[in-house]
Length: 258
Ligand SMILES: Cc1ncc(COP(=O)(O)O)c(C=O)c1O
Image (cartoon, rainbow, N blue to C red; front, side, top):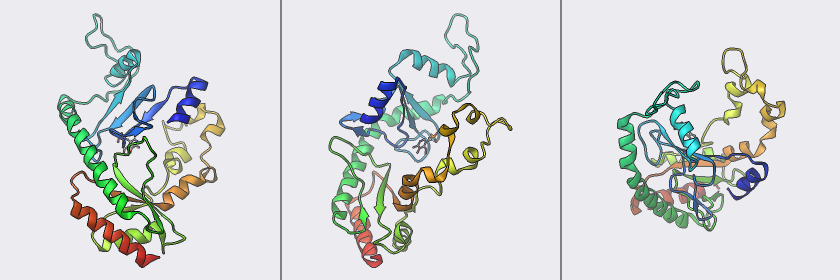
């Protein structure tokens, strides 16, 4: 976040933080979601805390908070003396029931994240020194709260790389996802063919062409990262026994593939 914020300040660009998978995470000692102008957290069903679907927007800018309040609810000025639909807006409000669930979950999320970190740190320690895989790197001052536990697999050392390791782990009842996603979003039709509003191509047609050039060759590290990653589901209820089983299984599967 340091270099991003520095660049943004230099050019006066607002930063929107995508913290969908990063509840309670810290970068350089500071909570993520507190760096940018606006931050977004997802409470979709699989996240650290959930409201079934939905999410949270965080800002300490009162004017933007007011704008968000209006934007998600048809821009109708609820509570105003002369309310109106002030501008074209969405109907994306969270219902009362979901909001109540979100509030009740906030405190649990703190504990849940602590447990996730504790369990993940144990696994990281146990996996130290196994050739062919790398555990998630966490710099001093950072806190990773492990929505998932991502291994990096060296395909030049292990037969069939992340896919091979996932196959072996599956035989032991351990689920994992090689590649995480099949392709980056910029390779999907919406970006590649600009399938947006009718045939308008909006908003891509407003951008500088080089800003919307999604040529595959321009993103070699994205492809490399997808090729090497193996995503293990993570859970605050993992016991020491679970961690030991996962660790032993990874060690043995890696040895079998090396
Ligand atoms: C990194 C990231 N950003 C954004 C989203 C979108 O969140 P939502 O589904 O709540 O809109 C997700 C959801 O999976 C995500 O993982």
